[in-house]
Length: 350
Image (cartoon, rainbow, N blue to C red; front, side, top):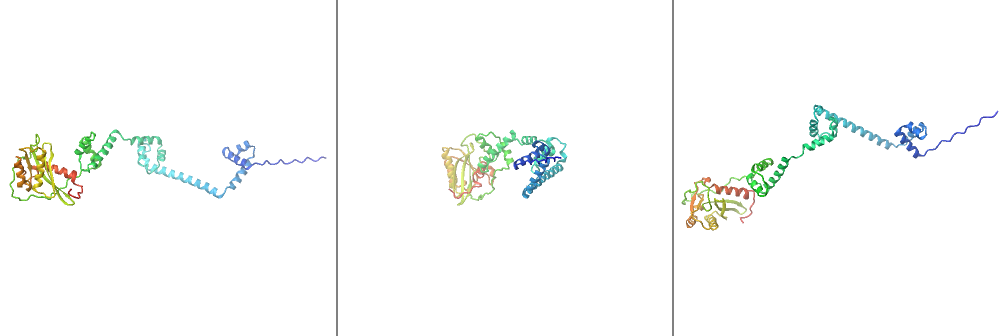
């Protein structure tokens, strides 16, 4: 009786680590069973390789994976909390038109994420951005106001904050800007700009000089049909580091311009005479001109009155304490103080 032949055990096929790694990647992608069929392997082999790979992972790698998963879950939880907060605040507009939802998003964009709000209200982010851009576009009128405000603010600063709307309008028109007074005034109001006002302060007063006073020939009639018909004169002052400086002027009422002036550290009759002499020289010594002043001692002095008579000029004086009788000169000095004197520091009289 013959013995059965002994069967030899088939040697196990050896797989390289690289092959095992690629096989596990394939199993992860298409499944263990499909990968085993494709690679002619047993499913148990793939399971064993996966177990060994997981056992080989270091503790630090496991901690990293766990930390990443925890971070993902925290982000997801934060998103859900934010969505819940958005729903609580915006529950009244869930059924409203998209424009109402856009308004809510714009109002709360600093508090909530725009993407989250669009997701909760079921509106497209692209729609929100288009609406937001269109809403904040500057129209033609707004652009004009911006340009106007910039120009007016710069002109106001160049004038040292001393010009109001009428004077600023004249200055801007001279520069080529076609703005009217109302437009300039509205721009000043919008920007809260106000011209500096004159301060009420007058250190001089009338004294009883006992000198003769001329009749009031002008009688507050400041109209002149031509030059050298009516002149007015007055004296003002300004403070310097060296003391007071006095200014005397003579104004022709026809062009309303200064034709004579003089300055001195003392308010004397010679100061008034020098201003009148300059006016006479400028206008070639006209005659029969009404020269109106106040009743100050400088104008009532013998020297000044003699100068009037010598050139055949007609002296005229205001009523006592009535500034309106010499309003043109007072108005000129007001403009001079506001636009040139107030706010300035004069170190010396020079």
